[in-house]
Amino acid sequence: MLLQTLALPALRRLDPEKAHHLALRALQLGLGGAARPGEDDGLAVSAMGMRFSNPIGIAAGFDKDCRVPVPLARAGFGFVEAGTVTPLPQEGNERPRLFRLPEEGAVINRMGFNNEGLERFSQRLRGLRAGSGIPVPFGANVGINKNSDDPPRDYAALVQELAPLADYLVVNVSSPNTPGLRALQQVEPLRAVLTAVAGAVSERPPLLVKLAPDLADEALEAIVEAVVEGGADGLIVSNTLLARPPHLRGRHAGESGGLSGAPLRARSTAMLARVASLSAGRLALIGCGGISCGADILDKIRAGADLVQVYTRYSIEGPAMLPRLKRELRAALRASGFRDLAEARGTALAARRSA
Ligand SMILES: Cc1cc2nc3c(=O)[nH]c(=O)nc-3n(C[C@H](O)[C@H](O)[C@H](O)COP(=O)(O)O)c2cc1C
Image (cartoon, rainbow, N blue to C red; front, side):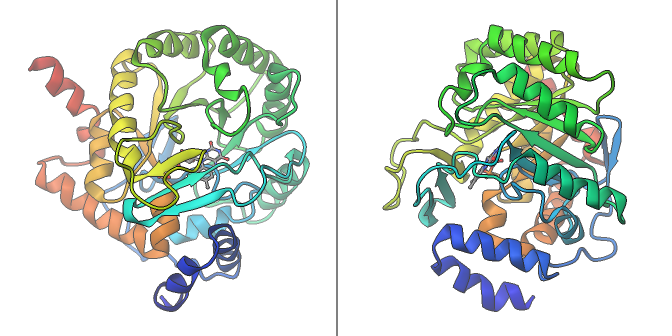
């Protein structure tokens, strides 16, 4: 709690990227908080053939180099996703490249897949697996280097290396800061990536594709079918938003990059609901984008999510966020008359269909 009361206000005044490094360091030092016994009561879910003690995961990009999955699990996340990792180390874009929009509870980033590369990532992960392990399901999120000349080959190599080490894998084709990356969401390129991945491994954990919230509604049906036909197991909806909602406030509102946090919420939840309805139970769904309270989580579960992820709000609020979200989620479930998360899942769609 010391971190919460003293360090967080100071972190908020720091350059956001420096603050992020300090937050990672604090987690490594064991200052990231610890879930209390009973904190997850009533929040267990099953998805992708695994059990999760609560449905709230840390989204990709927070722990790009797989440094803190264990402290994040101890802090109370129900699952942890690390990455995006690329085949080779990469500096990312020039700084500054991360901007706070405090008035909006939002962030704009154009980091550009800064990371230490696959070798270091998988070394760390191997070390953790050989030691006392990661106490929650662990996802590895993969992407391509800026100068990749063969994306299907690179995704296949990443999946081949990480398949034995991760509990699920994410093919990230939706970050706005790698030129050409989001074009891989079009049906043909997406098919090529999924075919290459399928050819690279005979056994792998569940594989998800992460989508951008800028995709047009009309494009979603073909994408969902390509994902199902390509043998993937699920979708993450969504990554950050390139479009800017009108009247976005804050002195950094005009910066280029992906927008995350509260202004993304309605759009990504609406897209999740569309994808849930199109996939009709054939895909596992992780809802991500703008979650800041328990009711936001219940909205995503009711729109069809099996699980949810948070990044921006956690970077603003720190370790106290998790017990709060869990308390609020339990209260929201009770208030809506649901026994548990499984009962709530997809009910917004059913209600819409019968209306
Ligand atoms: C600084 C920053 C870096 C991110 N890096 C990645 C990344 O490397 N890979 C990825 O798939 N998503 C990345 N994301 C997107 C998040 O995983 C998430 O999809 C998005 O922020 C929406 O969730 P939120 O509103 O809870 O933050 C990043 C987001 C932020 C704010």
